[in-house]
Image (cartoon, rainbow, N blue to C red; front, side, top):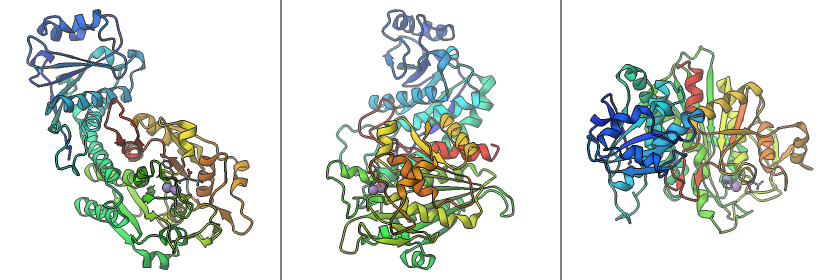
Amino acid sequence: MSEITSTLVTAPLPQVDTPLLAVALAQGAALPASLAELDRAADGGLARAVSSGDFTGKRDESLLLYPSGGKARRILLVGVGKSGEVTRSSIRRAAAVAAKRARVLGATQLAFAVATEARNGLAAKDLGQVIVEGAGQGAWAFTELKAAPDDPKPDVATVAIVCDAKEATQVAAGQKVGDAIAAGHRLARYLQMQPGNVCTPSYLADRAKQLAAAYGFGLTVLDRAAMIKEGMGALLAVAQGSAQEPRFIVLEHRGRGAADGATLALIGKGVTFDSGGISIKPAQNMEDMKFDMSGAAAVLGTFEALGRLQPKINVIGLIPSTENLPSGTAVKPGDVIKSHLGKTIEIINTDAEGRLILCDALSYVRRFKPTAVLDAATLTGAVVVALGHVAIGVMGNDETLLAEVQDAGERAGERCWPLPLWEEYRELLKSDIADVKNSGGRGAGTIAGGWFLREFVNGFPWVHLDIAGTAYTETEPPHQTKGPTAVGVRLFTEFVLKRAGA
Ligand code: BES
Ligand code: MN
Ligand code: ZN
């Protein structure tokens, strides 16, 4: 679904034969020199668009032209903002805006070029990668569950990266990474989009099985009985209210020998529907809680990318997965349960379930002797209050790893902002009856979630990513459809590839 193939074209712009040629342009009063030839073929239409002020080059701005000459049937100018501020993310976003427009126009092919003046020194490899990533993001749509879509459009089948022949090898290297990440992105969004009655814990386990079969990953899936044997009391407490069987999924990519040091672990929250349980949520927007498995989708999407790229590093993916529902068997406020690590937890609020399932994963992961552990979770509504829908909230126990994650987020266009896990905040989780309680009350909700997890981190550097504000959108953004964003796939993949030295 919405699969897009990338190609590379080294022809001069007027020679690019395509239904839609998108050109990324920075802000400026005049058309940049590098587009003079294309402008001549278009009978001066590009220069007029710029000099008239109809197109200014601001971020997300676009203008469609029908050139009189040249081989492109349409030219789309796409703004990337001020040239000195252009990053990988600006170009990726422009490619997404263009691909989204291509879909609306019914153009099944898109060619994308970046005016030299708008490049801000970006390496050719980066250009190749982010153009493919952006095109995949912008072109994506989900129509599978409608007999007849309201406004049927063909999928955008190909994106052609237009570049200079001298840079083709470098661009192609980036294109390969971009293709893999785009595929991971596509899988993650697909999984996120599935309704809760389809995407259950066993459905996620089946998808993990498909990935394992396709790419040779190791796979372990624990069912309820196996979780009882393991002593995963926190995950089981959340699962006990639901008729759906929980699953604990472990994928292993062995890019190096088992004896060889570095093992990264990626954990994703896989609550396939979060009603809140006995501490039930209000009905308003509760349907969005099908997205509470977005962390799991990020892990599976990342493994799709890793399977294609086969980086030389060991990566473990862990997904604790369950529904959170109220019933006569559901866990109740006041109940005390015993976690996999052995710490007891007083349940104050059954809606703080994400931290419960994650804490058992953080304990289980110790057997892999990980050198770094990242978890992604739609953990708190409070992170939306703190950072809106712009940034992932990050917390951890290791400043170096935190900086590394933030850096991967910048490269990925999935920006992270740190919140403090100071000792003072630990007080929030003190229980009168158990080792810790699962909810800290009103203030500092995101930090309380982070601190809860930290109580279960034992012996490895760790960073928690609260993606509740960034996993899906409630409104239609300019660069993709409304809904799932696959957040985490790009960040995780960037992080792993850098660690692998790729
Ligand atoms: N899945 C929710 C968090 C969430 C909220 C995700 C909004 C996406 C959008 C999580 O399980 C939850 O319910 N958190 C509670 C924690 C509280 C009870 C301590 C919250 O944020 O209200
Ligand atoms: Mn909840
Ligand atoms: Zn939740």
